[in-house]
Image (cartoon, rainbow, N blue to C red):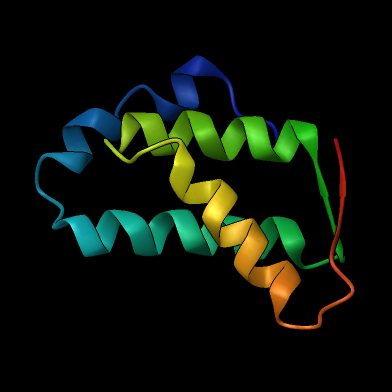
Length: 80
């Protein structure tokens, strides 16, 4: 799930037409995809944070979402 600058380059333009809840939904979808195998790597988190920033979201949002996933009794691990 590695993204380059050109992959996220248009996200700020897209973010201008999104409602905040839509931007958050995109971020959560990316997190769900990263967590699908039960492990979220630092590279995946960095890529999601990069997308979140481009979407105008707070960097804290992903940490809250990861903590929420861990708190639901899942076997989610992070390789940070």
